[in-house]
Length: 357
Ligand SMILES: Nc1ncnc2c1ncn2[C@@H]1O[C@H](COP(=O)(O)OP(=O)(O)OP(=O)(O)O)[C@@H](O)[C@H]1O
Image 1 (cartoon, rainbow, N blue to C red):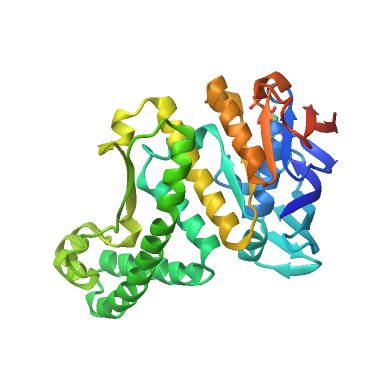
Image 2 (cartoon, rainbow, N blue to C red):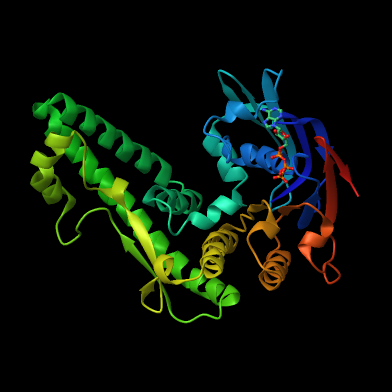
């Protein structure tokens, strides 16, 4: 899927801009604070209805404005063109697909966006929440039944925690039942997904690292020698004391091993970054294989984190992938030798104004 035309209104310092991006690589250059990340943020908002920079997406609305709009003409892999749009003000978010009001999930399925930014490289050593989000985004795109199951599970955990805090133990069994049913389902989705992702990831990792042995190990969020039901009953006293549910899929995680050693503890920072790149791109590759559901890839600040050799490896990989990609840098030289690339476009940003070069 490809953005044929993109309109951005009142996103950070971009007041009004229209671009017609290339179907593959798009380089976005400009000085610091010119608005490069704001352009990527606008595209991210179009796909995910949230910002990757701030907790509240309304913070991306330009100062002095009351709403932001991002709209696009978008071609799907089978050739049909649709019009996507998102409008956000302080109170609400409105999503339109071909003039009809739709949900955030509809937009996210239609326009999957994968982001690579300096913060992404903390995936291995940040908290498990980040790795769960990583997994769940992949599963969300892989299986349409996941979202409803995940929502039921999250609601059950929230309700159970309220009951624990207010000591309403009589109602606990009903929510435990719900939690166990949907918790097991979420766990199965995640395990199945990891099984699919692992071989793609290993292949990708060998592209970026002179790789030795790499392993992904999933932990469900409880001791799986026991059933989730059993664990809930064993933990009940502790859960009541602290007022929250200690075990379950909301505590799931996965660890990455390199030569049987925990990658985050032994690999250099550069190697860890390459491993994270391999993880993020393996999700994209899986998505492409499964549904030709070409993902849009946003790479914010390419130079910040990679040396020249790895930068050119990444660029070559992205060029061959066939996805639409937007990459920011302060100048064209940041991207290295572009002479072997075809059909790319360069956009220059200055004080929020975007010009195709
Ligand atoms: N809500 C807002 N309204 C208007 N301007 C904003 C808003 N939030 C941030 N800005 C400003 O927008 C400008 C562009 O920021 P942006 O992060 O997009 O720049 P950038 O080109 O990616 O910079 P860098 O290369 O330093 O990362 C900055 O000057 C920033 O202070």
